[in-house]
Length: 117
Image (cartoon, rainbow, N blue to C red; front, side, top):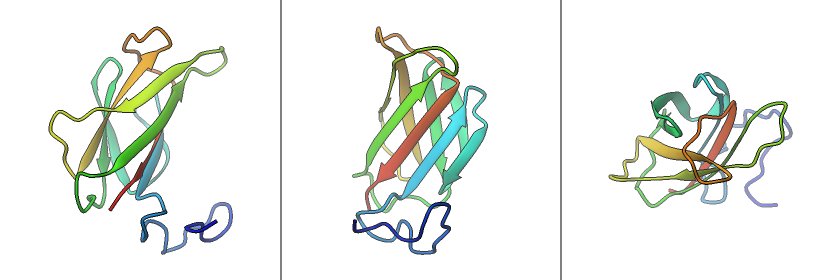
């Protein structure tokens, strides 16, 4: 697999240097406390179901892709997480978290990954 450098837990200096590696990723809890991350300085609660993921090193342009997942611990739950950009910036990513019924919801476990230049 191209773009995979180092083993599990690797802190290789090459991660994020090519188009086929993540430029940022983050896992945070319902209190916006980061549980693990790469190139993310903080997560800000914007509103119910909305969070702002602040990047340490900005993206080079706004043509990036965001994928994510969210859920509740200990109970079966299907949630969705998607990026939303009213005015895209290179320094932060907004994410929108919804329940299976499409209602904005805060979740205990949230993760995003960002690819782009």
